[in-house]
Amino acid sequence: MPTEVFNWKICGVGGYGLQVASSMLGKTFLRGGLNVQTYDEFPSVIKGGPATSQVAASVAPIRSPRQAVQLLVCLNEQSIRDHVRELVPGGWLLYDPDAVPKPSVKRTDLTLFPAPLTRITQEVKAEKIMRNVVSIGATLGLLGFSTDLVNQQLRQQYGQKGEEVVQENLKAVEAGATYATEHAPAKFPFRLKVGRRRQRRMLISGNDALGLGALAAGVRFYAGYPMTPSTSLLFFMVKHGPDFGVVVRQLPDEIAVINAAIGASFAGVRSMVATSGGGFSLMVESLGLAAMTETPLVVVNAQRPGPATGLPTWTEQGDLRFVMHAAPGDFPRVVVAPGDVTECFQAMSLAFNIADRYQTPVVVLTDKFLGESSFTTDAMRTTDWRVDRGPVVTRGVISGEHGMFPRYADTPSGVSPRPFPGTPGLPYMANSDEHDEFGLSTEEASVRLVQHAKRMRKLTDLAWDLPEPERYGPTKADLTLLSWGSTKGPALDALELLAAEGIRINLIHFFVLHPFPAATTIKRLAGVKRLVTVEGNASGQLAGLIRQHTGLAIEDQILRYDGRPFEAVELAAAVRERLGIKRRAHA
Image: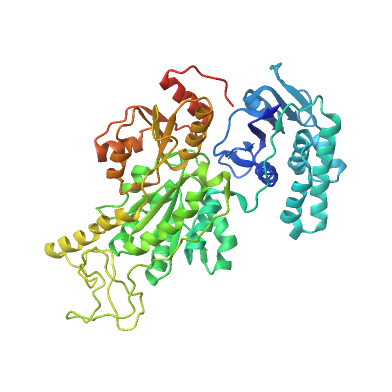
């Protein structure tokens, strides 16, 4: 039977190629004309522990994982116990009888397919770890997909390792497909509607999209310290940054990371760092240094559940209030939260231009779900991008008794022209103390008032340069969801599920959280029948911001803080419940 969304999940032990398998299968579906979304779960250990990786594929756009699984591949007994409940009625369990001789499955509505993955790897003279590749072949065999597309990928991915490695993988895929075709216990009941193959599409993670955006925006210095879930962005920059003239440094801790980036930015190059909440905590004092010295800086905070170490390899949206107020004192900053991989890419141009134009820190908030999951998107485009370095000067007037350049001159916009260090004839001071227009430290109240007001004045013009909240779905609806960051994808998927049933809801998504777009929010929410916020935290931080800036109290909130992303089917069910509509069978 055709299925709108085919969900494949492989389960086993971390370190045995589960993510490689889902990535390879996802790219195969993508090249077959389908939309794809991948999602991984793994424990916070170097190797081992229960792990899963899944691929959802559909002709229609798909932006979030599904819990209902059609084909479950289990490499050990524990994964069967943990995940067999996720199979839909009539679903298939593919397991390795060499690892699980007699699986304990009480459900009678499933088809069990014992595929000897270990034995097949031995027959093709491959390592046992390549059971993941055999399972890909078996999956394609059950679906009736040609192995040609995955074979092309294998050559591209492993070609540099030599023909022997390529052939080993090709044989593993073909052997898996052949076994499934010849020994499946029944006809596989699920069939994907094959889409039209389109050029210039990609399957990309949020972290890789951030990296691409940073390269396109002209980053020249990247510093990082490995901290999940930002680590893959560091890996991306290490791999690709030098080809674009980027200096990439892994430093011993997050304090060194942000200070190095501030130094590089002070010297005149676009600089960025990435970390998670715990690492951002260590960066807080230096964030204030960037603000006081009016040095541009872009910081990516890939959120995970706290407090303290929390759940290092899981997802949450709990750092919004933190990044808005981190560092002592008041100073202008910008906080943006991309909701999908395209927004991740576009956010970097905005972040660097705003940081340079207003000489202030910009924080880009993502999370584990968006950063480490992969999504189908069209090719990223930079046709309307421009690089704005702000008011940089190469010549100017020396004044004052010290014969220095007034780097922090009071201006109507609050933004002062800046020379890069070493510019002939334009010396000035820069330090973390309050200072006068030349950067010389002072504790005079009158100077403090002028300089502090000058910095805060930037917010007036800055607000006009930031995107407004977007509405998705019908203009008039019975219920309006409000989201920020990565909840955008599950919310949009829920909208489409409900629209197919004739239920009219819409979504207002916030890309910019600080400075908060109060006027636009009031306009967008005027005349709305019913409001529900959707957030991955326990305190309803967006709802609190809306109340703070508009006076509107949104009591109805859908919150999730168990480390897992929102699931579209469950979100749609929550909306039906609020509208008093009987729950229907999920997709």
